[in-house]
Image (cartoon, rainbow, N blue to C red; front, side):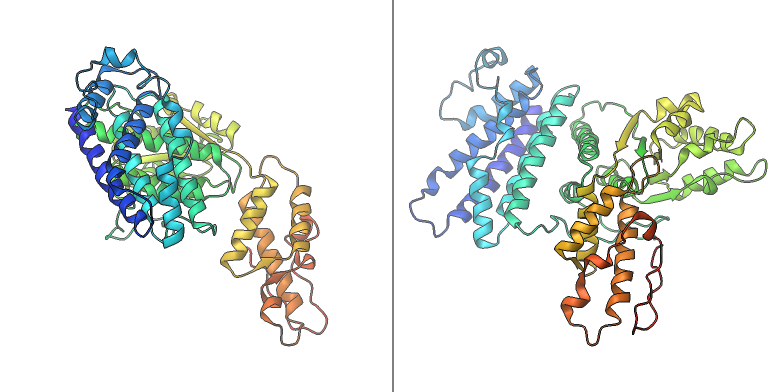
Length: 481
């Protein structure tokens, strides 16, 4: 049965990539299309061998599937007559994991064709390759971490090639409106593809370790989905998560994407995000807190409940209603484990106290993802992105002044990260407006260029309103939210 499953996705891989290679070769002299199918079949075999070798186990299920799939496709009939033991004793699979680390000639040809002809043939390669990789990982009784990490390595390499093809820094994904922080309307938007969601995740500034963890979560769920489709027993695991880190490190943004990933993979039906804090869960009188917690879970039904600063629930002592909220959260996590995904977020040390507040929390939220502070270069990139979206750009002198400002601000608990970057950007455009409004008939360059004098000189100046410039009208109000 597993051989039939692998055979189906490999057949699609060979058909679609043979067609893509044929399209890429049109008008190119000296190329024989007659060899394309054989070339693509060899590529498919190399991919399967690399994925089987990812964890070095080379199980009978994996090797029998390889024999059943590729035996009939090879001119050499020796594979068709082989057994798993025969293959283990050769280099047919052993040592092939390294294949995933470098672009193949076939992929490079499709990328080059896309660059020359404004096509998207390399996207077909990416989609079919990831399908095969996930099926291989689903063949074992238990999918190993090595297999998931190999899938992540393969995906990262291919997406890097697709970005290079575009060459202009644009996102690989279409712009989508942000998810609401409240229950979505009755008609939910269409599910987004895994490729689109993971590409949007990878487009975020920094957060490399976070992206790796989310990829592992997504790949594990995808493999379990494939196993369930084939009648194999899924591995029961908790989907609930703890996010730790300072404010502005992207926790809510990643949670929104993860909620949609869970929807695409069938964990929840709607994939919306409901964000609450202590005030949204704890009441001021006896008996009112549990209903508030239940109402929050109701709002997040078939989606994700994001509790920001969750540690504050454990701060008030034994008689505080926050403990009542935690007890109700533990109960509802269990009662609705297949209908609501919970993410609890906050500072690292304080979240350890939160998890210790109830014996049931630690086991129900076993996965912790740490969000590090952005470094200076990443914060500079975030400010640039904000400027690009608003049709502003930094002069070289302004970039230098901004870099100096970012380096001068102490890091530590409560460091603002992306929120700090936004505050600096908004302070800069306010100072820019105060300067430009005093200019007679400013041209487009003046209206869109942030100069050195527009950058706040120090941290204390970020929150100060811009000073009125002589000869001008009223300055803009501080636009911070």
